Image (cartoon, rainbow, N blue to C red; front, top):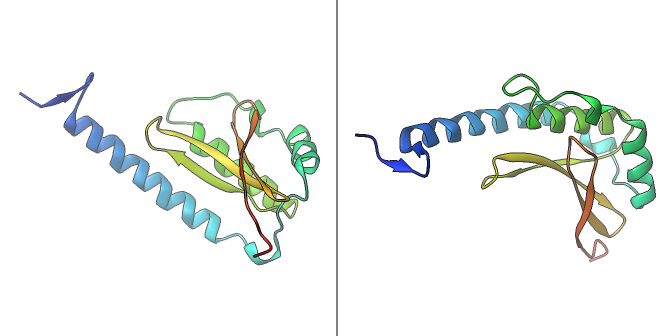
Length: 128
């Protein structure tokens, strides 16, 4: 009998982990293909919000294994890059959910991809 963790077996969890690792590698290859040297962070939250309001990524319909959170994340990063902005993808391993992160001035914001909900999650001293 296969060992269970919660409602899933260890082999199911290992398979899911491997699929996520493959997705991360694929996403990283896609990100590496973008010329990041010419991208900039958002100057402030208003600039980020203006970009998100005009961007239509969040209007896509979520379809499990067809257009899911990593697809939302990749599209939003690519759309930001096309507008000259730098954005990052983040994987919450516990929730198995991708989100995006953007720097706005000295603040760091998390973006929920299907709703454009933003949350300030920290700040940093970029000046040194």
